[in-house]
Image 1: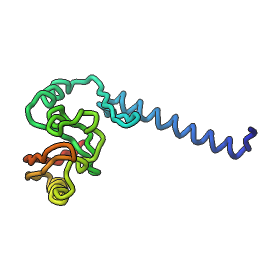
Image 2: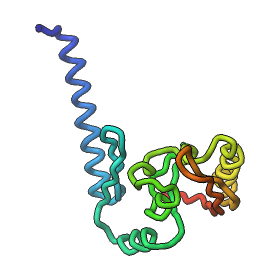
Image 3: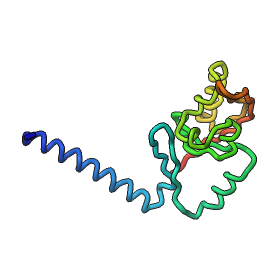
Image 4: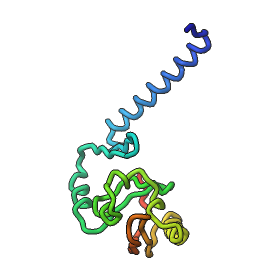
Length: 151
């Protein structure tokens, strides 16, 4: 199949953009701006972490008895410790990368969204959120949230 000059130029521009993005990612890793990756493969998300000085903090959060999460402004779970996943009776890879509200029964979503919204707006909030899904029992939990701005 023969391609036109314009098609080839367009393809070169696409490839150059991909290479530029790859270089930016590598540079961010090199500068220590990245400490983990969430990679989606098939139906699950896998978390890859990089070794760094914060290893003791990671161990602390992983070993504590309370569930711990980090979510972004789209409510996507960026980090979850094993305890939070066990509260959901779910493997960790089915928690990270998913929306927090996927784990909240529909009738409890509105008050949970209000609590999260308050945390984003005021910097902190505390209240009850009920977790559960079709396979598990309802689990009312006290959530204490703080907005943390990184750089």
